[in-house]
Image 1 (cartoon, rainbow, N blue to C red):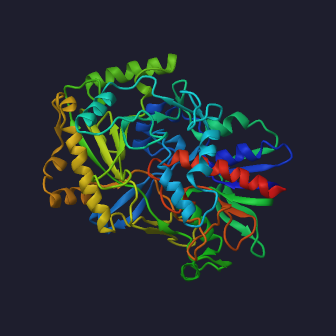
Image 2 (cartoon, rainbow, N blue to C red):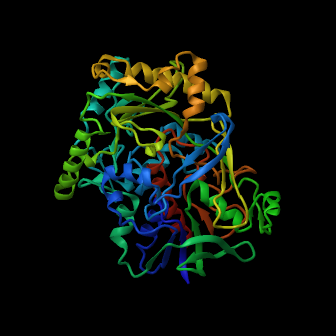
Length: 530
């Protein structure tokens, strides 16, 4: 018996495990389906390229065929390891726009406006630039400028300035608009995941137990109260009980799946899958949305200091391995997506609706397709998509992946914004700073010149940029799943704490916001102990 059971050892689960176990009188168990985060590919920042190619530490989900992507099934990578997606992501630290959180509050979620959540961002953060009105310098999560950025990140920024965009040295301060170099979750030349920040330093606490290889199959309910979990572990089906609360932190794709497997969800859907309805909650699994993203790739064979597969590139990589192993410095400290920015698809937009990620290498098919030679890539993603989809059950088999339908580009407005964004991205890459390299856009996109041709390219090539959210939406409505305290409506002693509770996706990378949500949740949970 534990006081708290935490389902999922990703970003939110690691934060909760650390914060709740600060009280020595409270016992906490964390259950993670994946392994410990021991792989060198996790800790070496550039190891993410190999992780992407091999699928290591990754659930490797697929969407159902997407009409908006010309019938293609999209790739949905999610971390399956301690640290979750923070152990396999590109380590970019952004929070979104202040308007995102004010919107959450305006939807009936008191305590979630920007001024309410800013203290939790600061509490989590140890920014090596130092503390100020927007940043903390004493939190567990190390945030820093890239120690040895590739020289082409600043070249991209220069090109964007030549295209008329404003510089922005800090996307998480007074304003989000503009272009610059991203800060990253690194420390001493290594990835600094939520596991390394929150969990690893506290594993010796006697009141904290971590189970890896523990695949939770359902939450145990008694008279609409969560009392424990059932999970597969070491070849057996086991159960653990919770005297206080069960905290569901399995992410936007698996938190709704686990709720439905437990009998909490839309009655008709549970019925068709042969699951007894213990609590009819229609919104579970609804409101799925993500940042649709398309990549423009440029072949630049003369730019040998860009990442690439060539003889010289392999020599540099081998040298980088020795330098990283000896000094935790050099080539392999790159997160690849080193620069970018937040821009408006048209002048009339009040705040940025697009995000750019500039990658110092040729990125095709999430890095899973081998591409030879040197070059660079640029992503453009839509920050506030109108399209909404769902996560549903494929069957009552808890080991079968859920049916994931983001409904990418289901709304015409989403496509129109991406077309405008694609043209702006191309305009930046055509500026003298980058044109001087002599690169050539790959043929697949180079053929797309008219809006109709660009739309066709987008539908053939767009996919996620890894930010699913919204499937256990927070709010007071009939299709909302949790309240402003993150408590599941109609069920006692059960909260959801992850990106699934976002009423609307934040305008930026989601790791820092999920850590913030968990920091705030820890306070909400502790307040309920009194």
